[in-house]
Image (cartoon, rainbow, N blue to C red):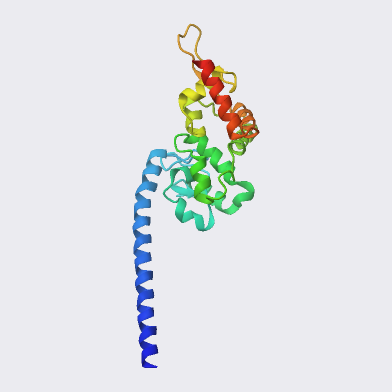
Length: 238
């Protein structure tokens, strides 16, 4: 019995040490995440959904609800893994954060939240990394077509749409800017030239609907066929 008690006591001590180490590790990670999240809030300066901020509060909201926080797009147990990932979070006011949490995935599916991220922070958008974060075994659980589809629906709801530059498209689609220009010049991706008359350089802008059409075409092809298409466009460019 004495030996058994000694073993039990030793086991408990090891368990307590393991819990303590895990807690310290988690605390250190949370402290590091706080620094990143604070920097995100300061950089955004306003809610990425409604546009309000502490300096420009929504007067229809209760006092304090225009304060900003970081919302994790990935929910449930994945929130802790997403808390310091710019490609998996949105900066929102407390009111919008409540709406995102209360209405859930039915009204705010991941693809819709990712569409907002792509529109307000295209440099941080990284669909491949987001899918790997949520489920490494399902790299195409959310597709670019779904994200662009949400952008088009947002235009239908609000009557306005964000126009993307070639640089924006390069970030969102994780390709080189020259590749985007080759798609445009090769008539694979429709773009609008907004340069004023007489300008020596062309200034392209791409609408979400054209990105959706391009993504649909891309997803209907195999990776090999698409790479061949890109290669053909590149040869024509040269």
